[in-house]
Image (cartoon, rainbow, N blue to C red; front, side):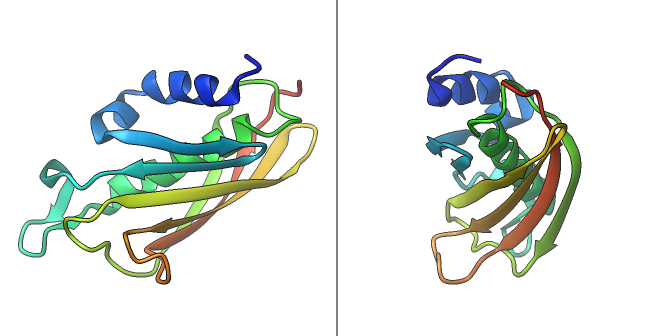
Length: 140
């Protein structure tokens, strides 16, 4: 894994067609933490009457952010894959607003990394969704 984790994360996300198509932008990467934003796009609206973004786009953002947090952890040596991801949706994201996911890899074993994430629209006091997950690990 390259020593510059931000560059590696940008390259990784840029190689995933869903991430590119959804317009994901890395806003922060540090040791075991990541933040990724996704601007509002009418192509991803799940309900045309309300303009609310489809939950699948939100889950893809959260999964990608969690994987980025795992890859940036000091004990992880490279790419990862999702083993399990549980998402709890608290409310619909406000139409027209950017959605931001923040994830933290809080524990790493020999083969599995554990992650927590929260997603917000522009109201950071009221989460849109939370997630917990397990991801594969390649030790560095």
